[in-house]
Length: 153
Picture 1 (spheres, rainbow, N blue to C red):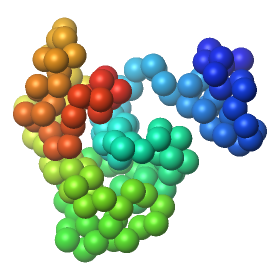
Picture 2: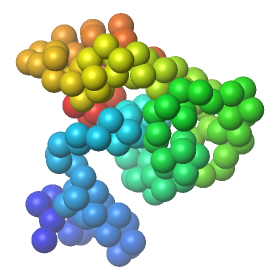
Picture 3: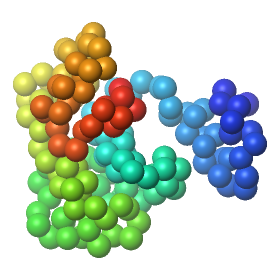
Picture 4: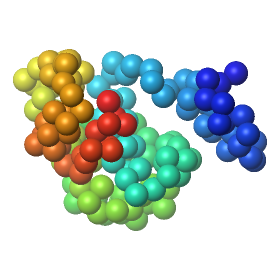
């Protein structure tokens, strides 16, 4: 049984299962793999202005479109890759969000070089208040407003 009781009343069944899987297996669970952390950041950025359900439905398409969230691959995307993403109906085709994903991958590569991993960079800055995290993310990454940072963390 899911800890999120709101899910139990969702209809149709496919919607309930989508949310149940997310809440039972992902939400609130720590992520230690840098590529998966990057994937979560991509998902949170793309959720801006949309429902989380919309993003959950597109998760596998995002994973495929962004090379299984492999930071090194995304950081080296070309203009042709940008165009491919902007024309992919399986993901959110917003130029600012696509550009943010690619630029943030480049930033994470630099953080990995300096700190050993994206996760270690995050750990290096603990503990911080939400406003401090928001300021740090805004300075470090593209398209990371307060709600995106809050949900990512």
